Image 1 (cartoon, rainbow, N blue to C red):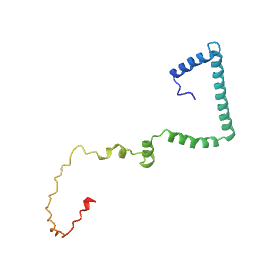
Image 2 (cartoon, rainbow, N blue to C red):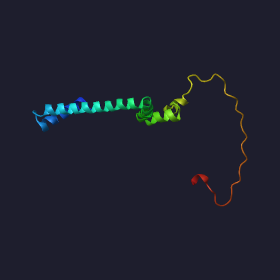
Image 3 (tube, rainbow, N blue to C red):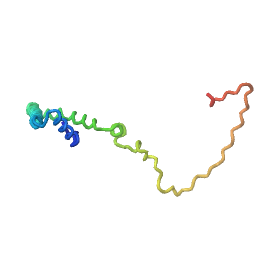
Image 4 (tube, rainbow, N blue to C red):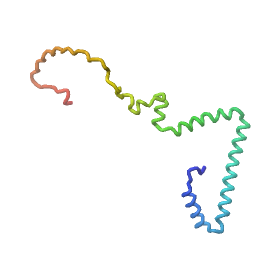
Length: 134
């Protein structure tokens, strides 16, 4: 629950509590907060164990989709595309598919024969239409 709270944040909370509550009531407030959190954690673990006992093996069937959703939740867009659309092959995204071989082939290129020029087209008279201009 408070996994993201670091030592700096804890220090700020203690100083704020010291200023707001005063040094006389701060230790009692810390004890009350810790016991309330412990009691809430016990309730949650008790409810989980009660569900596990009531549902039996069906409890694991309920947890499987939640675990799958948790995996998808932590996935980046690139990882999702790679996993689902590209079947784990990310060479398309990294650009490694067009690497050149280390050594060129030792074969000689085929001989090129010149092709004849097409006959010249007569120019139309009047307005000339340029397809590249549009």
